[in-house]
Image: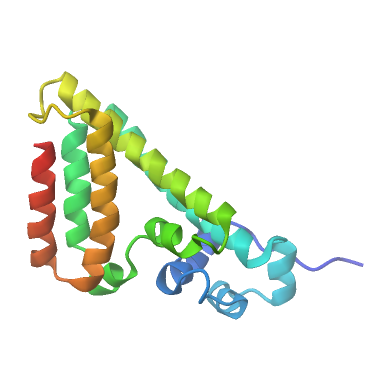
Amino acid sequence: MKGRPVLHTDKHLIEKAQEIFWKKGYTATSVGDLLQVTGAGSGSFYNTFKGGKKEVFRKAILQRRQAFEEFKKVLDESGSPLDLIKNFFRSIAQADEETHLKGCIIANSVVEMAHLDNDLEMEAVNILKEVEQMFTEAIRKAQDFKSINNPTDPEILGRYLITFWCGLNTLRRMYPDRKTLLHQIEMQLAVIS
């Protein structure tokens, strides 16, 4: 007798789950939501994700980590990583209103998981710290090549950018308008010119 089928935990399946978590948050997303968006039956779902909703959520945020790791590789190979970072922030302003209203799944998770799930909170915090370190290294490289005028310690500027990012993900919910966001982004990016 065969057991229940196991779903393929491929990137596409996790991306579908990620979208619903991103839109509704961890707490408001039910297993029913996950079954509907992935097209899985409950038996297959639990056979695949032994840790249930928490396991799916963890895999969803780890997929974001992978996207940041890919961006870091591009930064490391770039002759002007600071320009890539600036363009990354500028691209946020170009998103549609629905994307603005979702914010950043990682920043959202840090806030939502505080006092809810320490493991998931720390997973999200560590991802943001890795992004902060990525920014810091790019700033250090830019300072070494004299392509940035600000002599502030790269660690402080890296932390500034992660603070800016987290704030921007709230601001974009308040003002989901490209022009408004772009003005704010340019003003903040002047610090690393």
